[in-house]
Image (tube, rainbow, N blue to C red):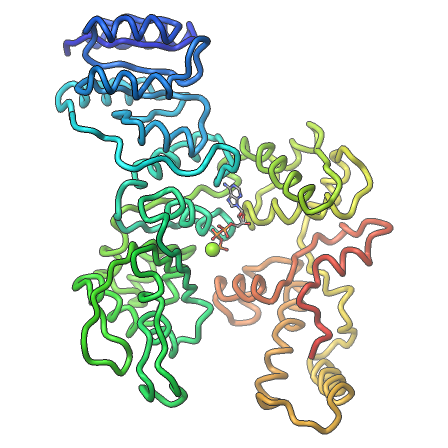
Length: 501
Ligand SMILES: Nc1ncnc2c1ncn2[C@@H]1O[C@H](COP(=O)(O)OP(=O)(O)OP(=O)(O)O)[C@@H](O)[C@H]1O
Ligand SMILES: [Mg+2]
């Protein structure tokens, strides 16, 4: 390898590592700890490629970057940063960095990138979109290597319309990532429309997506617009794509292939211009094997796969996330609190089946239910006590058997409504109302183990998870009841209310 690599980084240790490794790889290396020296070299026409740190004593590398691009548009610049937010990655990409590498870096990767940069020095103005929002409101929190890798990919996607498939466990931030892609991407002035495949009755999905004509099916009294039309010029987020029924999958595939669709009951094709982002917490390859998901659709959607790490894979982000959620709670009027080191260590050891959402809920409980300003390990232990048991204990469902529960519901219904018949029919209504106590009791019986509860109920695990979320059931830990807080707790989390039959 040959060529001169210029390095500006105020960390001497990093300069040493790079000097040695790149020197060994055959490059001439010149390094400096400040931006102005690098600027002098670059203005003198020295160097073939530059590595630029962001935080330096005399100037921010991200400010220097566009100036270098202006006088040396052919020189690839690699930005390396320990600042590690999504915005750093986006800014570096927008301002024309050849590559953005988060620190700590893998030296082999640096060498590969430099080699690539020197072989195919892609010129042209890489800076594609004007800049979006300011720095204050970071869309995503977390500086772990796993998240930085995500930021790096996201930053490169901002200027594109590529279809993205986001996967990850429940609560890992899939929807947040989809929104960030829209909000900072080139379609940010267009609409963002989200559709959850698991939340729409299967038989209505096609009309929901594509719209329908008046009289297209029983109940279609009027013409209605679909999500594709609503999302025109913007982004369509297809959430829980694994739950899409087969006929709708076929139709969607055709739309993606042809760039046009017809409404349900309609004839003439309508051109569409939407960017598709899909998300799933299910294993689509598994679904394909089971014949439940079309492989060809999968390949259409899986153009850029993004796998979000579980919170247990990035425990170093927990302090930042907790701080963020405490400050959000404070914005809503709750007292600002913090967690001490020992408490934080407890959080890092926990396995977080509900991921960031579970942490967010925990922080809200801490903010709302405890008087302490600084939360210690014993409170955390109480909150995280071994098993999750739903707060069924405080629900009005005293009876042991479901028969008794049905009676209770019927009684309550008639007490509230007299002889007046419910508009939707009692059968569906009672069934719907029973879902909640049934799920709560099943969770209680399995000590909060959702997998076991799903087996007990004969429900798909994801279906159960979805129902738990949609019904607003908060899985509260068994011994978590704070001496004085039972009332608050019930109010705070039984939002849907079991009593509104
Ligand atoms: N990196 C993050 N920084 C800040 N908040 C986050 C982050 N990731 C997730 N959250 C928060 O956690 C909650 C869950 O995130 P989100 O709804 O995006 O998860 P999801 O992966 O779509 O979950 P599900 O599969 O259950 O739909 C949201 O309140 C979101 O704001
Ligand atoms: Mg989601």
